[in-house]
Image (tube, rainbow, N blue to C red; front, side, top):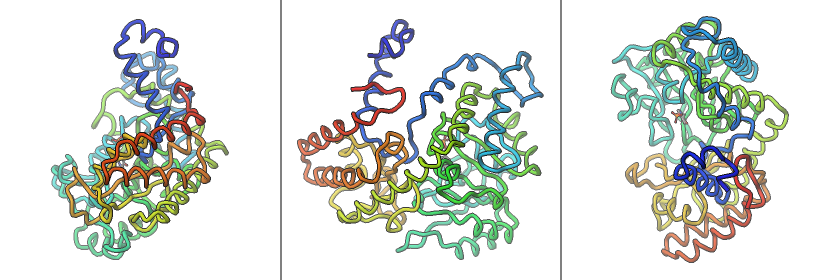
Length: 422
Ligand SMILES: *Cc1c(COP(=O)(O)O)cnc(C)c1O
């Protein structure tokens, strides 16, 4: 299988090729529910594996430090134009290597070490790079953190305002990695304006939903939009920073030469292709289907007695609180993995357990929607999750094996690009 799929790789390095083939099989057979993952198209996969990889191009289109940029400049300029068009922004930088370096560039552009920055606490759903202690952003800057209301699991905008006015942070981040609800960018904008802060919307998770019109856009409300390109946006692993013209210079200088060297041109090409795909009507349908599937899955989980943080979802993501069940998140996640359902264990707001052994699991619908599953399949998915969690509580390995066989059977009918057909 791998020999025909990657002939040169198989001939040169059969050991490595066998790992890739095994991963292809794993991605084909399993139900992948990690909300930050997806399946890129065949076109994105091809663009990301081109000879653009061979080129050094420090600088920006038209002003590089190396010659021979005739084609690279066109690739990057095309990606930039597409990003601006898709997100309705004045400026886009498509060079950040990934979401974390993109956020670091924002700090470099707008703050000095020791300055106060504000973001959502990691255990409440925020990202490490929003000033959390173990991150460079939390040790080089003074991170102050907001959370959600106990009970509702929703952001308390009044509390965020009070905190912002008391702390006057240089930068406020909104967005996160485990937020099942719509972010009110206008509310954050008025808070940031009052506090005199630069407002950054980190839409890494929901960029594809925004592009497809299934989540409100931060454009026009915030100073900077930071996003990865590989989550709901369904591009290669990378990131973008977008802003108004007034911040363009600061952002570009921070990415290069401030933080990075040569851009990954093969990734830029993949981003350009993904942005083109995201501008098509089919992607609007995709984004709305992701949300419809998540809502249907949340409903089916509630009907099976699961406790969901904030009671449900507005987007692609569901946070299941297993506190009332007999299994902690990690045990459940590992059992689900054995059942062919790939999730991650996650803290829930006000978790009484440790981050490495928390009370929740985080799931999402971007990947299964890319494979063509629809709302009619969601009761079945919820049923598998319920059976696997139940089997985990009873340490019933044979029940997990039965679920796994059913999952593999269904997934074989929904192929994805780059994956072997069973
Ligand atoms: C995924 C994510 C990031 C980091 O992206 P990496 O590519 O993993 O560095 C940053 N912010 C948010 C909100 C994310 O969800």
